[in-house]
Amino acid sequence: MANREGVQRLFMEMLAINSPSKSERPMADFIEARLAEMGIPFEEDNVGERIGSDAGNIIGRIKGTKPGAIPILLSAHTDTVDSTEELHIVFENGVIRSDGSTILGADDKAGIAAILEGVRSVLESGEEHGDIELVFDPSEETGLDGIRELDAGRLSSRLAYVVDSQRPAAGITLSAPSHETITVVIEGRSAHAGMAPEEGVSAIVAASRAISKLKLGRIDFETTANVGTIHGGKAMNIVPDRVEIKAEARSRDEAKLAAQVAHMRSTFEAEAEAIGAKAVFTSATEYQCYRWGEDDPVVRLAARASNRIGIPPHFMDGGGGSDANVLNLRGIPSVVIGVGYDGAHGHSEHISVDDLCTSSEFVAALILEAADGGA
Image (tube, rainbow, N blue to C red; front, side, top):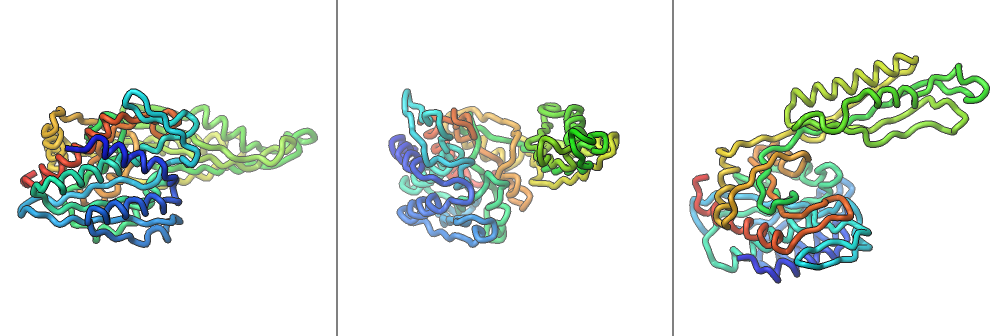
């Protein structure tokens, strides 16, 4: 059983650590100290040097005590999407939140706490278990940078569980989308806006006309698109000759994603051409989708763990990417597990101690179900 006071205290200690993306060293040091206290061997790779972070991937390894157990990997990321240096914690009615001036950082400090507490409870219980690998990766929020650069050859697990999602705690995310990042540069022609505007071709006009005709937001139940930033123009009295747009599209269906990207490309190109401008459209795959069914081994094991702690399995489809997208691509069947936080990436972010305990118990149940083998 998870220790309620222990996991709460562990989580609160982590909340006091500021670890935004690329500055995860204090959190890495904290995790390594906890692993050392539990006698868990670990190493840290040099990925930080390659991704511009002050910390690398921490890989912990726990030798199994039961032959035939399924070796599993548990993962959570060490960065937060924004700084928590000015965090003021409010704790009332069993819920931990910020005072509304910053994020809380439960994404994904709650996941780290759940893994550490779940592992601790199993090791201290003396129950038999299989091989367990732990991966705590940096800079997930900036594009899965740490896990993407991890040498998968270092890992031997057959199944992986990424403890990094919102409510419900112990929820099992069966699928997550592919993600295309898009950059559009529209090139027009500058001119004096007061003396000779007819000699100019406004890149901003071309961009605005195109954006007004794009299908954006929720396209369907598994496809979304967004225009995130627009930068351009030099001064209010100059017809703007250049605008850069950053956008994205996501879908759990590759054909739908390709169609959405093609729609965005053709719209920008057509609207630019219509007024004598030029659109240079580029897109890149950030990560690829995964999709599992309830009968797949990685899901069946998670469902058994859920039943073990008295919670009917709750299956979900995801709208964002995570370490699981990368691990699946590397050949390690992976799903995302709900930690129980809510309001991630916003100042309303919060989590209940009950959900934190549930996610810790679920981690322990995963380990014990894997010990039974035969997923």
